[in-house]
Length: 445
Image (cartoon, rainbow, N blue to C red; front, side, top):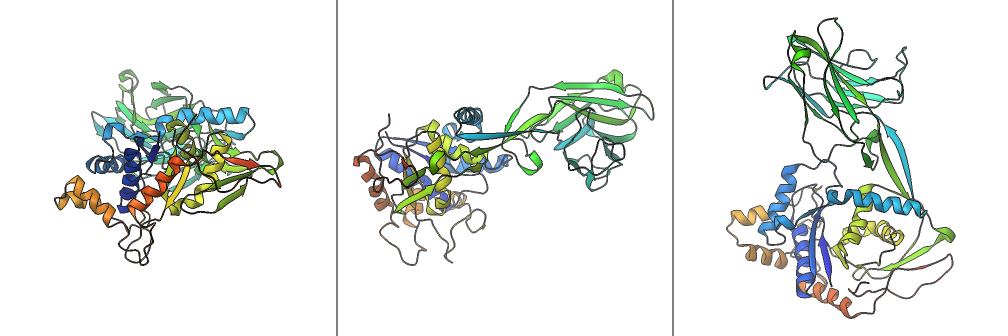
């Protein structure tokens, strides 16, 4: 059975090129009684704006590409991707580098009777009082600058304190401290953590120079965080704040200072696909780009989001990968991931990408591709009219169209793979040879 998919990254609104590629995949699967899946690549950006994901789902549903209840998210399979990496590590096909990480706060809001309490100053562990910018951290009492550091964007009188903190200390409890207006009686604290969050968080309060009193405690299970970014930290997938309620007994007399203490460091990971013995060579062929692509496998460092793009095709059972030819540069990584996963290589077909009136490819990053589905609705188009417009005007700005700049011609090219002999990824040792251009049927063991 044909299994095609469309996996947009939530880095911008869906433009003409995205919608065209989605419809091409959908129509190919429909014509040949196959399955079409939509899976948003929310691992590409660990903290995609929820309103952007919602707009993508809204456009896909209105264009009759995929109903919202069938839209999948890469992140839902994160545990499965990590299990696959564990299996590859056990087989010697991947190396996983693990490092212990410190604690992070993404956002803190201290409240009293539902209102935010302004913060007068911020301190971190043994550091000097914090100002805007970076504060070097060291557990050494001489306050030497250490490789590990803390960043606090500190706005006096404002509750918002964006922090990134890492500790080299294993023998003391790291903390971040907030000075509050004298006599405050905070009842809740809203905390958003950057990953990995600590396993335990304790809130301490005190009045003036009095002793510290425990006011709240939270415990959470250990996390395994795939992919190391920016000093080992990246934003959470879910930006929902954790709410900790303070003990009324601890704050009854009023408090001037609150300390957030962290216990239980977590681990982040980065991954490397190991080079097979004898300098193995992988041969693969693209239907549209043509030619035989040859790449000698090497140790290759990848992130979880990159691995997930290949591993998700294993989970979905993808038979055809149909996407824009600007993604050709990712072929080597994609093929090598599937090779180590021992998964039959899907049919690869990189369709000519769409361009604007200046000849530049339509791109979310270039901001040259507006959200046209919204325009369609504003102009009173029906979904059927909008889909027809997307297909008929896809290559209208191409100066020299070719037969491959045609929706039906592209479908015919893909249909030709359904009667070709089945072929799997072919490989040879150093100096070895493989067969000619590779094709594969939609059949699957």
